[in-house]
Amino acid sequence: MFDLSLENCRVDRDLTVNIGVDDGKIVQISRERIDASEKIDLKGYFVLPGLIDAHVHFRDPGLEYKEDFRTGSMAAAHGGFSTVLDMPNTVPPADNAAEFERKIRIGERKSVVDFGLHAGFRSVSDVKGILRFMPASFKVFMDLTGISAVDGLFRELKDLSAPVPVTVHCENRDVVMESMKELKDRSDPSAYALARPPLAEEVSVAEVLALSIHHEHPVHICHLSTVKALQLVEPFREYVTCEVTPHHLLLDSGAFRRFGTMVKTNPPLRPPESRVYPEFLDRINIIGTDHAPHGIEEKRKGIWDAPPGIPNLEVVLKLLLTLVSKGRMSLSTIRRMLAEEPARIFGLRSKGRIAEGMDADFTVIDPKETGRIRSDEFYSKAHYTPFEGFSYTGAPVMTVVRGRTVMRDGEVLEGNGRYIPAEHDGKPGTAESEAELS
Ligand code: DOR
Ligand code: ZN
Ligand code: ZN
Image (cartoon, rainbow, N blue to C red; front, side, top):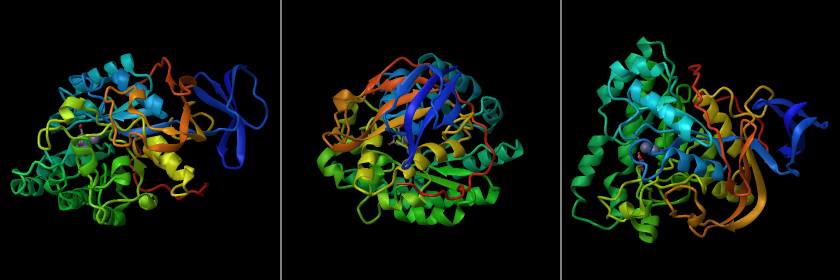
């Protein structure tokens, strides 16, 4: 007898199955009844593989007043995510073996959901030590790091025969500095979009593409925000994958007028003519939330001093399901961009698919639930969102991590999140296209 049977799981439009779980793994998928000590009837709700957010900032250690691993992971569970990959710009940064290992311990103590970690990059001498812990990627911020330092990272990974992707924040430092000069005296929030213009991103993407092709090494471009940056990436899918955030997908620079510095983020929101739209999703690998919480008082500091970033974990799935309800995207696109592709790109081999032998991670969806987004219901410490009051159709009703229910009907329960080491195969290229379901 198995530990758990999830009954009446609608895993495809025309396919409802029962799923047997034992010891945290999927052990049987069947139309027949499965004998188990616990049974949960999912009544024909849609069941997706547990969703993975490959881009979160949990601020732990060092900036726990903004978020910590416990509240961040509770926000993840609440939003329907069973796994997150945390970014290294904590304090001190996770850019050497000791800090990287420390962060694994913090997550294992506090996290409700499973997690992996992106490593920071400070010096090539730290790369080998970090590799022992199997990072999801090495993350570099091109607005802070010079191109020759990044070239050094590629060389070191090559020398060590490590197919770990380089994950990149693409904004060219020189273009940003030059653009800022002319705008320093302005204090209106919309000046921020001009200070870090589309060209900064496009130049940086081109530089990183050149490095990737030169070294034949996988690169993942974070939060791609302009249509021209997307055009640059497209011929190089063999080595390069890319990501879009919910805010770049759904908002444009006009949002500065309404929300002020709350929507300050890097890269900034773009004007309608250069931004990306939901209709482009077929050309993009993953949706990452870039959940970047800050204190609300800090966010009010004025356009140049307010820290950049928007908290997204608890809104993204409702926003996307609303697009599904309007026929602007399909549920299979959510499955591809928030489960299959992040698992494949970042080497999470036990995650991302519902199949026997995989971790029993599930995101259960009620496509008909309606309501309005309310930031006072967030588990995140950041209780604000530009999507406040947005009326949604479709919501996660349950999150399961290795057979354990960590969220049910909007309430987050106890969890036991584990560190998931990444096992990369060095093949970033887009997976063969799969049949679409609606
Ligand atoms: O808006 C952003 N916020 N962009 C980044 O690259 C960093 C992030 C943060 O850590 O707050
Ligand atoms: Zn970034
Ligand atoms: Zn980020």
